[in-house]
Length: 437
Ligand code: FES
Ligand SMILES: [Fe+2]
Image (cartoon, rainbow, N blue to C red):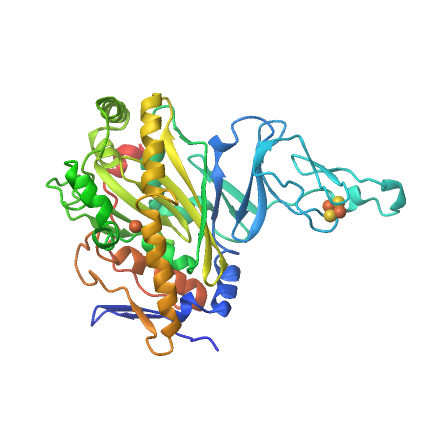
């Protein structure tokens, strides 16, 4: 039996609670697979990962194996990586360049635009498989925004731009960082954790845990003369030193705070960043460049695409449940195109030493989430988690929990149909008119 109420959203008491069964129940997971991973826009990959004709990447997207590729004309495709014969993957490599995908089981072969072009023993079929089955299927909706490709397995879902709404501005703040655009750095972090996927959503936009879980990192930074997050002096584009959380329709949310410089950066790295900033200022104006390079930002795009820009690195992460208590994570670094090798090396260093599965931040986060999942074993006795921090404040700080509540309200709407009002604190940290024009 699964609980029928997953959220307590008490506006009078400013109390917000989540039923711990949401993190443990296989029945909830089945509903999530149907109502969330079957109906929302899911991230597949960035165009820079398949730069040339016939390039491909294989991915798991919301439980479906897909091939993200360019066909022989250079058009981007997303193909479901399952043979029409009896189901085997038609491509078993993680990436490469191929005009034809040949299923290794019985040898059915498909062009990289999907058409079935060869069936060994075709003469034994009176039914003509190529005519009956045509080719590999694609998700009913494929769309992109600023080079990020998404799929939606629901043909009736609203389009991607509508779904992203104003939260898309936080993708712009990453995509506009170089006049030449941005690219994914080669190399991928893949790891799993023994915890529910929603714990990682919370953690990815949680400013509250930084001081406690990551104290080793911050102590190291402070010894080197850097200012820890949320303890600076400056207000940037209306965002006070303590930062703020913000919410958008459809469960997207961000926390942001004035960035406090670049830990461990050499003068050359600082110069490169200053150069990017002045180019952005020229192209978009000071206000937008301030938001881009002066604010650290953690954003979630519902359900599980995370974009974290801490100036010393820009990480993109997505993850999907393996079971109610296991999550598979994939993470990448984004770099502005056209920067020199020293800058790239600095970003790689930070990607490994901070965000990497063996870095200074990620193992601590994983430990915290796995401990929480263990704690949920006592959910019969202690049934609810608290997400109330900052509720009722006119401007919740970056280390409050508005951004999580916003995400949970959308989760709740999709799982139970119950629509809960927002807290009315949607904020874009720059003048949109100037940028949209
Ligand atoms: S399953 Fe692919 S050829 Fe048989
Ligand atoms: Fe963390």
